[in-house]
Image (cartoon, rainbow, N blue to C red; front, side, top):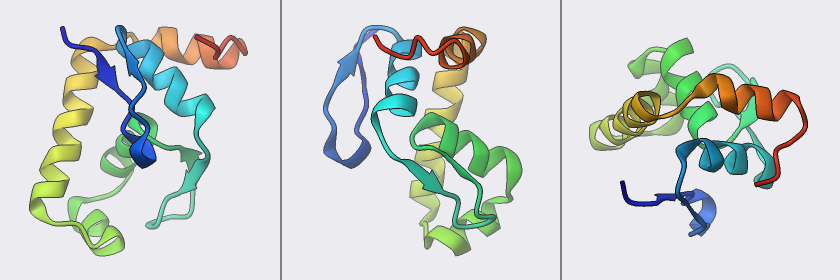
Length: 101
């Protein structure tokens, strides 16, 4: 599979493993605040997962002024990552403090 690219705020870092990408997003970038509920969380995958697991599409669209295309893109990102990633590994790495790649 092609390398995974960060793409947060123009970050073009690429990773061979999706788990490395998620750890990078969680440790190398500032946390963000959910515009729906105010929860502060890592940007990237965890922010997308939070938005679509905790809130309705309508809430997301209103809070982020998102288009249907933008919603579908983020839903596709979430689905693709969840098909490929070992999220348990990511969480273990983040909790163990070994977030460096």
